[in-house]
Image (cartoon, rainbow, N blue to C red):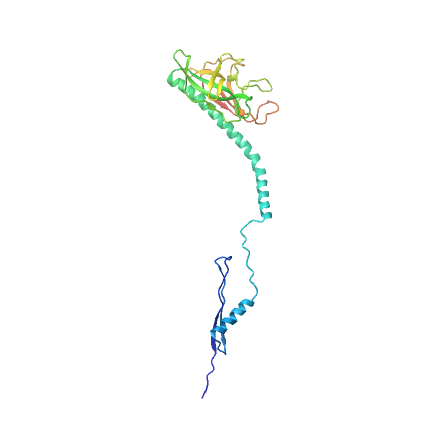
Length: 273
């Protein structure tokens, strides 16, 4: 007969939960111990032993919260961006110049086509004026940079503006000079050698007494220009960017645009190199 029964006593030890404000979520750790022992200890003793054990344990190494760049990483990124810019910029600059040329050419050809169409539909003469203006950066740099269309009324001396003054985006200009061979780049602006062209001065907004050169579209759709052999035969305008590198042989940029007006029919044709 068994006089006494010895059975194991179960002890549940819960270590205190430690909260650290600097850690994610605030909870660092919680340790649960469950063991078997032959001796029964009071809850106070169990708790005291667990606290001493926790207090004597080595401090925990907290993981660094790496949420920023080091100086080396930042320098590497800047170096990569600099290399990319060195490859991209040379390709983008010609594209921007070409876009500027195309936009300026479209403005001029649209105005010429509008003037001719208006002359046909309204059965009256239409004058197209090209204005010589300084650049925004240099007041002494006078070039043909703007244009406007007028309708002739009555005895063909009264003019009514059909549009506002249209300015080419700088540094685009309509060349009024010659190349290195002496060829005129815009015969429609060569008043000196082509007296059929009109000229005068007009007060523009913020530009009083602005000189201009003009020609007429007739009510038939043709022009007042004379269809003779060169130097007065071909009537055209040459547009390019003033700050573009000039060709050593011709003296003009390689990227330019030419709009030619047929003296008889008034039709506009365009050319690109």
